[in-house]
Image (tube, rainbow, N blue to C red; front, top):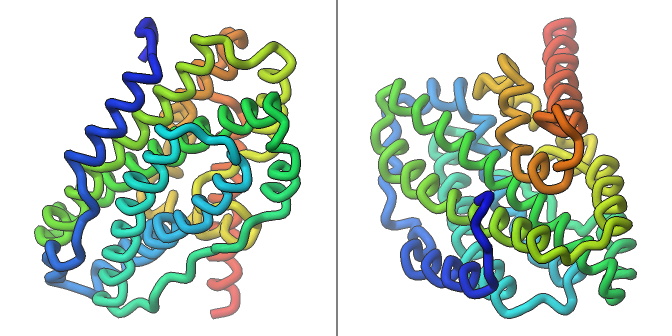
Length: 292
């Protein structure tokens, strides 16, 4: 939202509207009719599992926020505790039920808090550090939610193409309606911090360093899950134009965190993370072919 002054009131009103417009989707409200379970499983089974896992990891995300942002304001607390988390958990539960419908095992979310979060959390009581952490939280949220929007749009189109109307219209459409509002919250919050000059130059420098060193694609928080991210990217066709996808998911931090770097369309660490994940999946697939 360049050029617009983002105020705390605007952000609070946005959060309130999200809660009013989009209550959590009830499991009984969706139609899980699948015309061809085998075809859906073969083409998009892994992507459904990936999305279910990422959505269900919201429980870990909330615990991380409690560690990283001990003095969080009421608007942020309302957003992640009363709006975002309940919505995301229902997304995960519905998608997980869908994948068992098509003959896949239930997803296994990663719920352990990482050592890096614990280390950063130990310093979070210092206000300058907490301000940096808040900016990183908003940037991560914007990137993750943009990834979700793109993934659900591609999956929705794919299901329509396959004739899986129930999945597309009663599951994916309601889910993808909720994700842009989450993205807007993170974008507005990060923009407000830059507009209000909350971060001093040294804090912005440190935020860039931490972002560059610690970035990972949503759901790829450890080496164990990189292949999963790569498989999702391949199944959705992201691997056909990695740079374009990276520009989409990195546009907020390109504009805010790296504004002084002329000509930078996308932070290179985003492209690198995507390529590493896709490469890891291709290597795994090649090993499987060789073993067969």
